[in-house]
Amino acid sequence: MTTFDTSPGSTAFGLRGWNPALTWSGLAFLAMIVPSAWLAAHDPRTIIGVSVWDKPLKFELSIAVYLLTAGWVFTRLPSGWARTGGGRYTVWASIVPALLEIGYILFRASRGEASHFNQTSTLAIALYATMGVGALTLSSTALVQGVAILRSPDPAGDHPAFRAALGWSLVLTFLLGASMGGYMSAQTGHWVGGIHNDATGLPLLGWSTTGGDLRPPHFLGIHASQIIPVAALAIIRLFGRRASLMTGLFVAGYVALTLAVFVQALMGMPLIAP
Image (cartoon, rainbow, N blue to C red; front, side, top):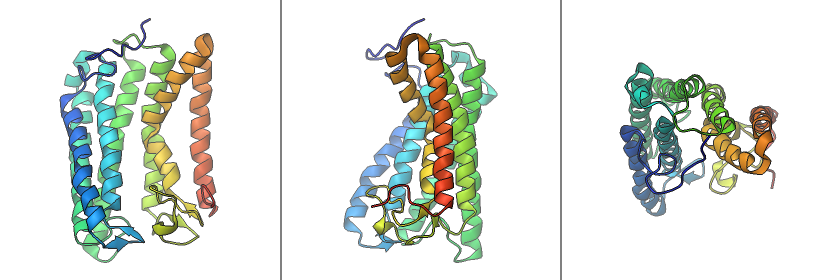
């Protein structure tokens, strides 16, 4: 069993072995943050109390992290997997929906209009529904990679606890992220009671401090593929031989936490009250 090689160029933390299309796409989304941040600083228009460029910024960062994670996961799979149907699906079902989604969000922001929960016209409703299909397609690639990790041989020699955590984190990204996102998108907004204005929400995140908010459980779901593996690395260092057991308990606890935060939101209670 080997441990992570953190030397430059390693498949763990260097770029060798990463999927090029996903990696460059993720870096491109990171680069989009710069002009969006500039516009947020200079454009006085607001939607629900925050800059019209607030949503593009958040989605550019979130999608960038998602794509870069997916690109890195290729280093934990046999090299030939990239040429399989699952590998090709992961690449194109990630990049195309991501580009279409951010393009639509940027288009609406440029017009000072909401991209989400926009029911101002039949076209807006249809485009929002289409964006939902794209988001589901994008998140399904995590399920494909997660199943592949759990079923494929380990070319990187990772700790069994880490590999199991990585595989299940990807599966949970789809199961939790897509289900929470699907429920939220079917509502008229992400608030459950409280003040329907992000200006009164948590700094940076905007999550409601006066009522329930469906965004926190969706965040926990969609970013399970980053949070759980990082936690697993810490658990392996801390618990040694008991790492597999403790990692399993952490994954179970993470699912329970996500569901608890979801129920809390449905009850109209803020994640963090001021």
